[in-house]
Length: 75
Image (cartoon, rainbow, N blue to C red):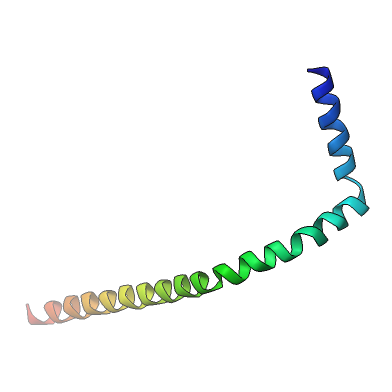
């Protein structure tokens, strides 16, 4: 276990260095860009569904309020 802990500690120390951080960012930047390009349509689709859901909920609320308003004056 001691060897394993020493290796983990050395890796963590290496990851804290600024040059290693910059190198990792440069290495993963194309991968992250590719992933974002793949999920953009799903993000837009989700936003559209949320907007449609909001508009439908708002419409139902308006219909309920209008029904309650007319029932109040018809009684």
